[in-house]
Length: 253
Image (cartoon, rainbow, N blue to C red; front, top):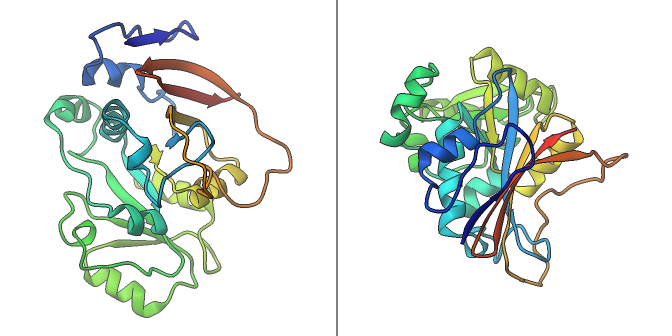
């Protein structure tokens, strides 16, 4: 069963049999003002963000459809290096269903992938670097190993220094992306990166899929790292349901 539970007057009705990519694109449209950072994550009922290191076992076809929709709307997808390694990240592809919408918004054919990494310990021979439709970006700190910076650039990546030390400062990273016209921002984690973004107070929206599964074990939550001094409140914007999966959308209060 497919259902939409309206939460605000701005909710776009999505009823039985109408979950086309166009309808989902309307439901998940970015606000006109920017920059806007959205996160997309999936969690089991007991709070696991992955099973045996990957998110696919707790996902679903509709979750992946929304995943594709959010990518189709974004200027750039921000992801941590560990997630790139574990999930075998590849370049974002151009999708015919979003071509007209992206052209009208002044976007390129596909979003760029921006990898956050202090060490730049990545496989620069992987398709993410050798065969992207849009050059892959690397967000790193001033202390990144110079030899790895040279290897990244030789592979065709664009290195962006967004921190004075070894790591990346979230606000500087988002500002650097915005300077390049990348204001519709999407992060797919992993948990460590999402925790850093939350701690920096730069996350505007969370699209969280609640999977009707239990995993037990010691898997990470969707956000890791130090606790926030004061828990930040988000407001529920919309809620979709299919086959027990809940597709939630929260915005910062």
